[in-house]
Length: 469
Image (cartoon, rainbow, N blue to C red; front, side):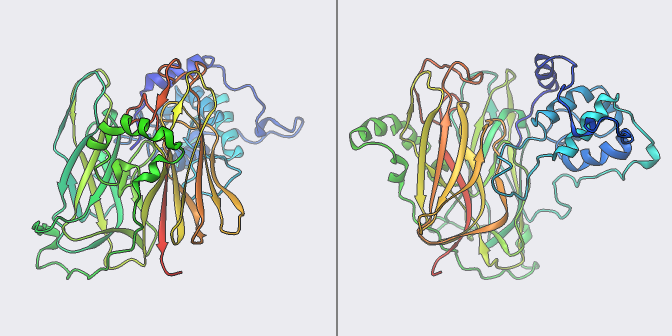
């Protein structure tokens, strides 16, 4: 879920960048001197439709952004700031290299759209004719989908102090699922999103002898439940997390990791280092899977919520709720979110471009659906590379300026078929120097760890496994 930024932060960033002076570079609308200029853009005719498509999903009442951009009155005073963050491509947030790959959820604006917004702001942000305004966009409530969810589970409220560093919280919630199901859509929300850094949801296998109570949605009067086969998943070798370490270094890393192994890495998918079932990460939101695809839930399963809270100066309570929409029957392409990761690295003090890599070999053929890099405050850039069995290498995603505040899941515009034996490799660089304004302490060696002041290297990827092909 998106990490809320205050209106004051936006204004502070804008002021630090030069007050109300709009970007001076020439835009496409300013080129071609001597030609008759196009009619000036106005809010209702030109800008409001753009904001409906690109901004209002977050910038609306009840959205994840700190202020709305719905009415002309909302945007008029913010027009200079809006023009700046759009021209600098800080908004809408999207960090992938636009020359590599195509992604279905690409939020970036093309040059013509950027130029239109900048020209409108420079022209005084005129309102135009209200009679020519597009129909007001609406959003279902309380969820992002009109149909009510089939299953809703909520964690008990968790107390968050005003200050300090908190360990991850792990909360187990029974699903009461009477029969296996495929999830076709999901949404995760928290009551105090400003206190939540992330939520990962792991799916625990049913324990022997545990009774699964029937929820109301699966009462005898409901539609008969389908019989679904459990999809194939590869086994996980936790020693792969030590890749990159020399044999003589292994004892040192194991010693450092003992507390995390006992407390965190025993939960779910090695605490998220092997993947997850569903997530609420910065930059995320409700997800709908493609037709005939979904995530499998066995009967009697339970969820483990991994909750990472970040105190903001005010104590409070927060609970997280996961809503699920089920498919009517089996899905031919079950989705699995896995990870390429290593915990065996140390970033030297002051290192401005420290490289860490990890890779995994696909045990069977797979159809790739999405990629999701994860690092912390020293993360600088992140690249996914596929090395095919014939030796050919292909860059799948390059994030040249990683931003910890926006951890996007980059969903491929078209599935990519990967043969058995394909190696997925991730290459990341970390900036532990004083030149990195987000760096907590450039004088320290930085190791793998769960807290924000530590570092991670995880390359999540979502696939449909194809055993036997």
